[in-house]
Length: 176
Image (tube, rainbow, N blue to C red):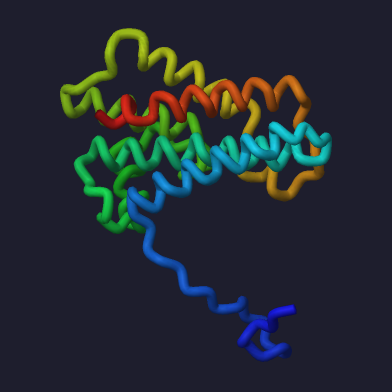
């Protein structure tokens, strides 16, 4: 077993170097979480439904964040930090929900709103479909799943798999 380099008596967390977030990191993580969620879903083990749901929901969230910053004009290698997230909150103040920056509905509405502000609205029907799909994912996924035992129903997981797959297919469309 590997030992943490921090003293055993210390209450501090183990120092783990983490790179700054960038759109490229978001895009890579989105793809990884999507694939990992699908792997858990494909195994169809009853004990892995919430894990699959958790990962698939995060792939949707990460994808919408990355698409938002791409639409904003940020480059793939540009750092994205908390100040950038706070700027999104400032730009879309009435859209923040209690989940804040993890809210699928927030990111869907912020992305749609940004495109409208820039004079580049989605093609007809896509805005409504984005809202519908985001709501479907929102109804089945919360960050708090990480604290729960397996409570995801097979039907909810099937819906989330289909929804996350849709987001994966249209990701490029969201930001171009």
